[in-house]
Length: 387
Image (tube, rainbow, N blue to C red; front, side, top):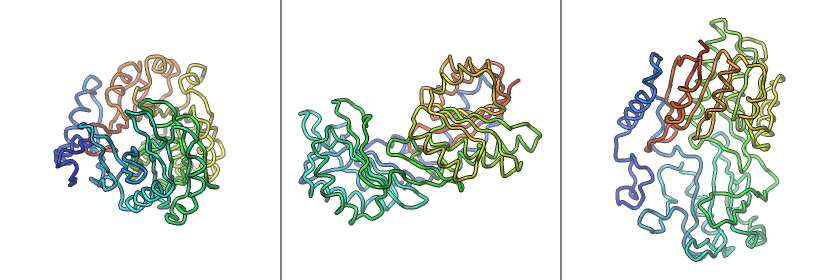
């Protein structure tokens, strides 16, 4: 990928961009193999590659400059305000939306937040694209409600200029701190959900939903997990009860349940656990659309749910945040002893630490999914069996 900002030293966010892409993949595989070496033997499958550019379907842009000359980008390591509206990581359809947003900031006289002076209102622009529909979700992150009325006043003009905008909201983040968003969200459009679809599985995103930035590789990740489950069923394994902890909007659980139902002609029981109630509502809507009847998505803490559980599922899926499962949850999984475990992780270090703590399990296979090209990060999918 060619990037003028990186070549000129203005932006180093893609810290591995100077390495040829195949070299990046090889290095990630080597680092993963070294981390998991104590758990040998296991099957290490080939890495799933990303597109090298235009793969990032979420933009998190700091609003800089002034209301007359707004910039959407970052403050770089030299302390310079850098406009990244032309960043090659984003699909081409982002560029006209960024341009329209700059026009909107000028029209509505929205004041960018000045970090050093602690004044101004507009902190971030968060933009997400559904690769399935080509529709957008836009979020304005504000310090207060001072700009709420003026955004509402001029919003019809923005929607007219960018008819692909499906959901528009305001997030309030009043703290002078390195926080991307706050707790309060005000949706300004009749539509409150952005519909995505991966592998024929519908997924509904709210403004505060977590979703992968690279949907094409995410689709491969979910599809692979489903294929692993189908292979187990074909080998005669009983997979009538599934749990999906840290389920988000249901990506893993819905893929596995629908795939197993199609393969075995019997609907497995699925319990999905996620702390965010809005994500649970989205997952429930998707399950109904797929015709999955034996599904229960619950807004609970995943660790607390496992701690209280007395009986294990046949297959447990976990997709924790970067910190991993932690010692307590690993102990509860070891106590419950589900026969099969699929663990997806965005942090190979915490994954390796957790796998060491999962007593009584054998690592069967591992596959790397390069959701984060040009960086040191990746997603890793693992399959474990109770010994």
